[in-house]
Image (cartoon, rainbow, N blue to C red; front, side, top):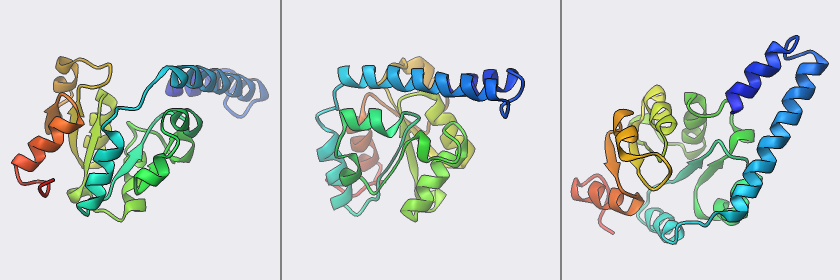
Length: 178
């Protein structure tokens, strides 16, 4: 929707024209309202905080990047910034994923080189972002994308959820033991 909204606003006499700007602004407000409504119905996975804490205790830096707004994320995960080393929502990103700038900006905040990073996501756009940024990609099937769709995106790792992914990475000695 974000890219589609930008294109439509540009079609309306140009993005710099007042009509294009008004259309874009109103469209963003509708998206924001929809996200906030959905966030009020969402629940954080119960393993999220312990998983992030465990990774941090193992010396692994964690960053969270999302196409959602900070306001919507904080409805579901109010302490997100205390639970990870970097958080970047769409309004903080130079360009949002699948554009590689989003992932690369988070890596810069973390001070982590591309070859030492793994982008984990539950949508094909996440895998696309990882590939375009030159990162390893892991797909978890805990979102709305089916296994077949995620597998077709070509992740380096595919797991049912983050806990299974961590187990698989530890079995391959890519993460320290828990």
